[in-house]
Image (cartoon, rainbow, N blue to C red; front, side):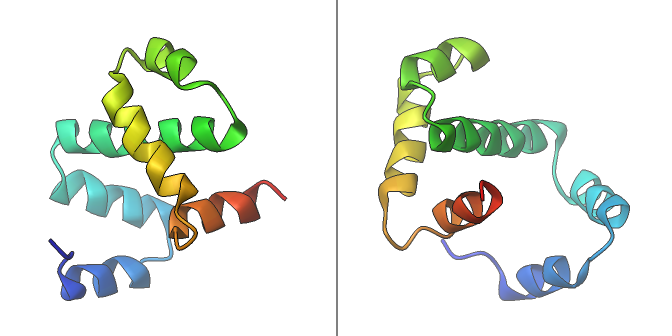
Length: 89
């Protein structure tokens, strides 16, 4: 399901980190924020080359969640991979 384009436009216009944090706190539940943060952490760990089993142990999560992240990073069209590549330079 695509993300609502109005929501994406609003998020893209927020350039202050404190405001963006407040927006996320208001729109997402604590559990949703935890899930998003966890997904970002495991993607960064995968990008750094950390083994999937180590990541599962580090965060106490299943290999299924990590495998999904691994597939995302292997996709040549992945925006996340491009972002992480540019941050690691």
